[in-house]
Length: 387
Image 1 (cartoon, rainbow, N blue to C red):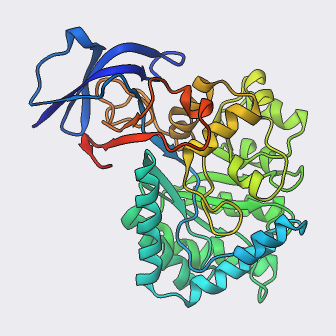
Image 2 (cartoon, rainbow, N blue to C red; image 1 turned 120 degrees about the horizontal axis):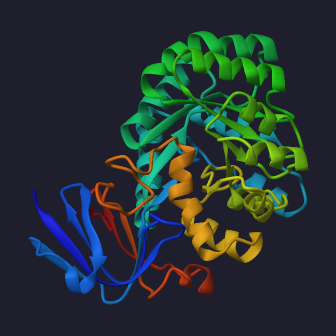
Image 3 (cartoon, rainbow, N blue to C red; image 1 turned 180 degrees about the horizontal axis):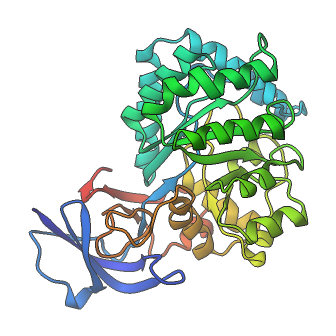
């Protein structure tokens, strides 16, 4: 097993303590895992030595919310929003039509391209969803394609109700034949609990069907207005409720008292001209948060986790360490990862997966200090340099 020592680290963010940061540090990787972390002067010998010249090293980003299996784009819709047309859930149908018409090769090519794009920017672990097929065969093929590329796959057949169904008949399909078809390829089930998508009763049916099949639970909630999404997620013990743009005090209290993480998607809120979620209020209340891109062709066409981190700091009141934790360890927790387990992601500690994001900057502060500047210097995934 080949070992590599990364030395000359100016600042090492580990996430092993409360925002643990080490200066003048070194790190040793053996195979796919980290085997040692400590002062640079005490680094053990290794087969390979890489000096990063005083640069900052972080855990690789964990993007816990994306929609990468799709065809077409929605440039016209984006332009209309910039001219004042409000975003609504119904725009998803444009992508559904294009996705159904696309070949497997076309869908796979887009998925691989966007996964590679994310990796070049430091994202070493990624979740993606179905949800642009909305028929049994199309959801199945989207799930199968996603399973070939993404680290985790979520079934989002309950994205919108297609025009040829009622909410009742489509929920029956999602909870029955569609779930049966995708189950071998997915770990999670999700539902868009929102005006124009699924109400609380139909959303609960979807979550209960997923739980009965052994899937973890996720919820799209409170994106376009206050609604039942957060309370639904907390009541059902979902790992994460995502968006959380419009929260009441009761929602925040419920999240703070639960194990459900609030996954915030600031790039989406900017693209849809929604207010940014109340990240500072959530943290101050004791809730845990994650940051993710929501990469999709309609409401957030970006794979840049750095952009989300920068936005969280400059516009949402988070500190640099809080934002980085939310985009790494917090995101891993939103996927129900045990940060102390061997092979853990989102954290740098012995036995964790050797996923490193090295910045061309002396500290992680530069992510917000130099907004918009591409700072990724190199990326290591499972102990191998990938970018």
